[in-house]
Length: 388
Picture 1 (spheres, rainbow, N blue to C red):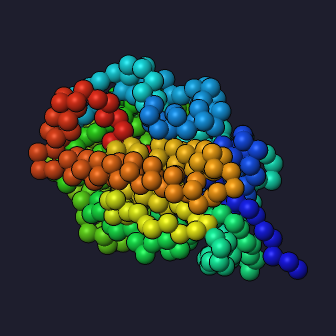
Picture 2: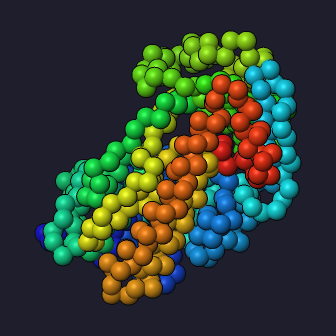
């Protein structure tokens, strides 16, 4: 049996990979997307994303999906509250509805992208375990079921622990010193009115030295909470997350003396708590041009979530790469060089901002740093809240 061949193979059906496939499809260029999930609904795609007018929204326009995006925007989601550990409001801004960073549920955005692609573009249940160069820019990709395929252009859109990245770079994500414990409070206005009031209509930052509660209201009325703690990498290993009550008690030990209304964001959470270590690639991560392969999104520039740039960069990476390929028909290397030049520059800026914001959010006088930044720049700080 001959090995299947795909002129363009995109590894990963996340936001960036789907955007790339969509832009190529609009211009009559075929691409195959491979994803390890068994189906489009295999995993919950929760959390809110703020889509920026200078990146994510640009990408959605290029993909012909901007109007569909607007139909799913969460009204009021750009509102922001900043509290200290005593639940005193240090800063509060309403949703000014200017469209600069409107919020959308990640699941809604992914479904919009999935629905825009022709049937058969995505190969579900295709877990990539490795790739090797064949010469002349071609690569062979191996799947965990024993299958393989070849491609003229291999795009790694496969996230933080990319299987494609080693073809280009020996860099790997490093722990940033921050760990999250995620929690949910469904139907908050009815079942958790105190927490609903604390969070407000958009994003919440309740900050102290080395820790805090970051939360946002989702479009279905639930609250999603990220409890952040500066801690050793092994801290989460010592928590029994199979016992939700015990896990809550352990996490809340780091918030002794904090206002009861803030502690309730964890104490009253429903369902399992989810641990997540925050990793990042080096700021300014880049590589020398390698024929026939490139990366986008977290595979290229994983960063901490404290500038709200991850999803936006994935979207604009996908759109830019697609448009570069269309603009350089028959010259893939010229397209990749043009794409990477733009991508490297914006990723470095965003990664540096993310790292700086992470230090600012949890410094000794928190939340003063965030308040000062907002007052100095008069900018929407909602992007500093992580996206699930």
